[in-house]
Length: 251
Length: 312
Image (cartoon, rainbow over all chains, first blue to last red):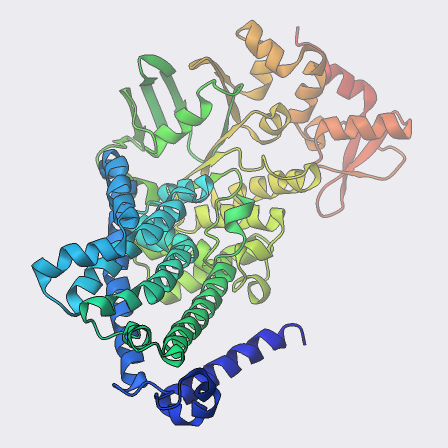
């Protein structure tokens, strides 16, 4: 029962989310008390489903870019030839994280125009750090005896990386990606201030017309997405960590 | 044959291994002993070029070990280490298949080899092939580690404290198994340890390292009867000398004609263990039996005492 309850809760959350996106009308009575007499209770300036998909698309593209750059960078600086770039790449990635996304948007708009592009840049920069740091941790905390055995067996540098280091570091790298995705899901909403099509549009429309129902439904959809994706990625991570066994601890 | 010729390794000007020259005969077990920091592991790791020497050369069957890239050399030399270093994300079978897979053996040949090695190391393939390392006991992990090192049928097997992480009972069994497998496969084994009992149990020849130098290289008996330096003397332990001598040879080599009362001891038991048995049972002699049960003669307390005495 204790194991089953959380999965049931998640399944219910997913079902409600899908129902709300496909047929928001069903939920109108619930939101109606929150708005003034003549105002609409359900967002009516576009399809919630389309906005959700666009929101997910922006997050997916930005995260994929961040994964490719951050993992590659982490691999390079953990090779013997790249070790001297480790401090430099660390500070570069840190700057990406400390720079507020709103400021990135403001700076990117003159260069890239309004729309999706500045949002992608902001999310990409913001997502780099957790992935980079976790990949570094994963690659630098491998068991020395396993690495010694890999060299002793006659693996080349490349074979060691792809057959041993990356598979063993994968659960930790995935944890970084998960963190990055959840941050991006929330941050993507501010992309709508520069006209990117995300769920932020619903929230902003609500703020402009003093419509609490809009703000609430935009926020809740983003929140539900974050919880579900976080859980899904956690499950994959646990499965991988099990496969990798206790090697990390015992050696 | 492994010829180590004037090999030196310096780190920041300090010689960790200093001008070591020794020749290791094929199909023998050579044990390198020394305290920590004596350079014994560095010497071992220069044979398969996990460490590149600063000076000197190592030849395997007459061929310099630098004629091929390091990774190719290492695929031809078995390597087993303390704490086994099994790949935690691969099954036992995949771990054992590591080097054959790198060498591009076909699947049938790899599968046959894995099954053969699992059987050799007393691990039922039906049970163990698909398991992951963390599902095995320490002794089983160690056996898989050695099986992996032997998978590509190397002529030379290097072992760095391979039994260091095992408890005493499993360690004795692992040592006995290693000797059996060495006799069967005729592999040349070079093993590093700091455990003198292990060295005397396993070695055909022992190399003693001290502060980077090879201070003595000889048979176990030579080390006991004629230690080259104070250090070798200390390492062997003055009070241990007669027992070390007895631990080298077997009961079969001390057989005298005649019969004796009591439970026969096996011919391959070490003389040290026979002495222990004689003392414990309070007898002056015990019969010795061959593996097939036939009585070969007896071992006497006086005979063993003569053998344990300092050679005149």
